[in-house]
Figure: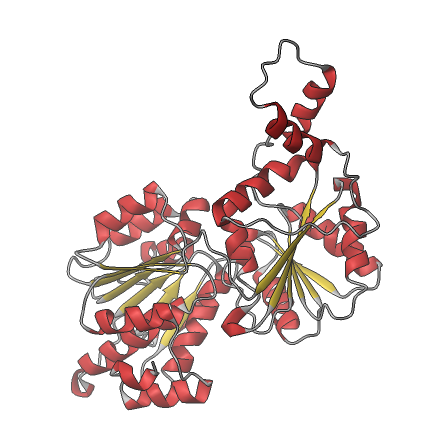
Length: 421
C-alpha cells in the first residue's frame, strides 16, 4: 500500500514525499483510516514501527479540515504527552515535518530548562502542544496553559510513563481536558495499570497490535557473549576495535554505569558520550546530535533516557548490562535493523544475568547464539552453564543433601533486585 491510498490531503502528501515516505508501516496503515474517521485508538507496537506518524498525520489532517480561517483561535487543540524530553522533541519535529505545508503551530515543552521561552511561545498562540507531564502540570498550575479546548489527546509510550512513575501526573492532566475529545494511546506493552487507564479514557477504541513485544525484528542478527562482570569493559573495548562497528548504542543499567563506561571508552581513544536523566537537557541534546551526525561513535544510555532516540542506520546495539525485563530487551534491539535494513545486537551476560537471558529467550521463543571465541570468555565449566545442564539431568532425581557448591551456585544465579535508574 502507498500513502496515496490512505485518503491523505495534498499538503501532507507533499510533505511526506519530501521526507521520502512512500509506503506506510503496518501501524500507520491500520491507524490512519480509523483516526481520520474520528475513532479513539489503542495501538500496541514496539519501538521503530512508525508510531509517531501513525497519529501525527491524521491529527494534522483533521485539524486543518476543521480549521476556519475566519475564526482562527490561539487555543491548544491537540495535546501529545510523552515520557522523555528526547521523545517529545522527536514528536515535535515530526509534526513540523508532516505539517510543513500546513499553517499550524507546534510547541514542545519539557522540564530541565528555563520555562521563559516556552511561556513566551504559549502567549503567541499554539495549535499543537507536545509535553512531558511534569512541566505541563507546572505551567497549567501557573495559568500559562488552558487545556479546556483540546480536541485531540495522545498518550505515547504509556508503559514507559508507568515505569517512570508518571501515571498519577497523567491522570491529573486528564481531569483538565474536556469530556468530548478524540483519544489515542500507544504503548509497547500492556501491563494491568495501563489496561485500567485504557478503559478509563478510551471510548470504544479501535485496537491494533503490530509487531508483538514477544517478537524480535528478523533483520537483527543477535549474539551473546558470556563474560565476567569485571571484564565487560575490556570486552567492549576489544569489540570496538572492529571498525565495521560504525555506530553503537550501548545500554547500561544505571546512570553511574553509563558514566563509567563512557569514561573508559574515551580513555581508550574511542569517541563516546553518555545520555541519562542526570545530564542537563543541553548535554543530552548535544550527545544525541553528535551521535546522529557521526561525530560520536558510541552513545551510552540508560533505558529511560533512550526512549525517543530515533536514529537511522544504527549499525549496532550492545547490551552491556542485560535487562531483567525481557520486553525491554526487544525494545533495545529494535533500535537497529530499522526500515528493512540489517542490524546487529550484541549482549554481554555475566554469572548473575544468566536467568535474565533465559527469560528473554523464553519470551521471544528464540535461542540467542553464543560467541565463545573471544579473549574474555567464561569457561564452559562455569557455574552458569553447569547449572543449566544440572537442572535438565537431575530434575527427576530427588536430592537428600544440598552441597556447598550448589549453595554457592544458587547465590550466583539468583536474580538481583532491579536497580533504580
